Image (cartoon, rainbow over all chains, first blue to last red; front, side, top):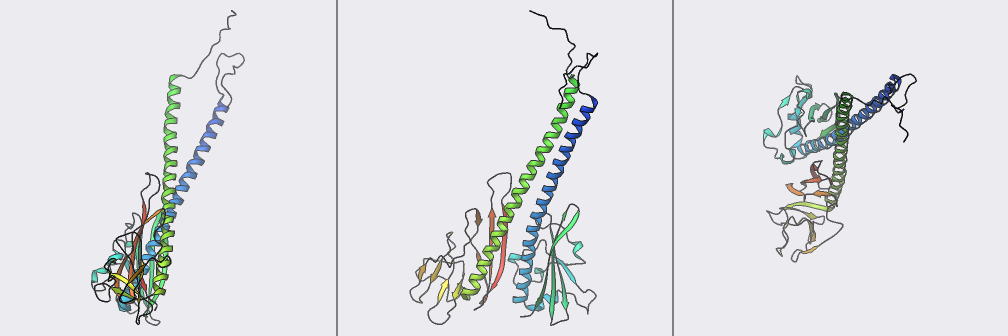
Length: 172
Length: 189
């Protein structure tokens, strides 16, 4: 920036001209806006990456639990909780936000399954602070299979993001 | 001395200075806060990625080892149990019997009292504990804290394995990142 000590002819006042000030302020503003924008975008991308890692882990965890139910509690446990074309609901949904999957495997207690919800939108974002894990079960007409859809969602920049796994589980 | 010509010099006024300082004091903390947040988020994200990557690797190794080497899951509450007849090594109630289920059998399991995981071969009457680098699960790493895997007997061919991995970054600004792994292994043999 031009120093302010060049006296103008015929004037005892010295300082920046209006153009100099405008250029200076424009430059500073541009640099600040770009920097803050870039940093904000980086923070958002990193948060999204972290949420995606967690979502992937939680989705795998629930998929493992579903396979366990199939192997140990037999497919009937899944079909009992699945919707079918014979019922009003083709797919039945469950929120798996609060259930302790690691210590939940006796096949005896009906409370092992969370309460049914109308859709995944009814689930809260409480898993790990800001995630939502939901499973939809539908009984397939082919070979007595159950189609399981596990979705773990979160919000990033006001847009809903999710990690989804589809599984067809049939009796072994 | 030659007197300097008298000049009408004029600097910034007090109000101008106050305004400039106030603007700087508003902008600098904002920028620093954002950068601090960026660094913290970056450390959090990379720590979690490390835990996930390591946890997935350990999970794959455990599944591969158990599925391919074990012949049965044993619950030590019922014979034949996992406890060595020498009375030295106890497992957390569950261990695996080797693939050859007839005659001399091989058992490998854990010693939950220490951080090491042991493999021991049993010759029916005189159990012999050996450390076998190829047999224990490589769950210990230099930077990630790993709890000893907990085995849960479900059936002779099915076991649940659970463990927690934690990574604590070398800074106080980020909380330790941890993931709990819990999965089921069905034996192949």
